[in-house]
Image (tube, rainbow, N blue to C red; front, side):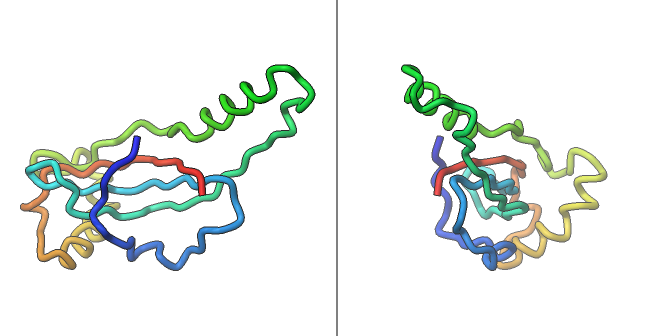
Length: 129
């Protein structure tokens, strides 16, 4: 599933280089307005992933099929989306303590406040480089 993000660069992880791996694992906060359009996103984690083909035998008749399925499984997010903020409140006090300052700082860039936000979701995405 691909999403259309606004043309934004994550200011929190722009210093990380994207090279030397097979795929990436990103965990981000997606900030939505009341029209369910993304206002912004904050990249929290950017990790590298690697395929380990050593588990499969290249001479096996099913190698190609198993290899495609293996790679597809690795590219499926392992984390279910988590609702951080909805109905003008944080879902847990720990979410507020952990993310509020970061979110407010990010929203200032777009001349927005938490009053402009409908929901905030924490989601994982995996994609090949």
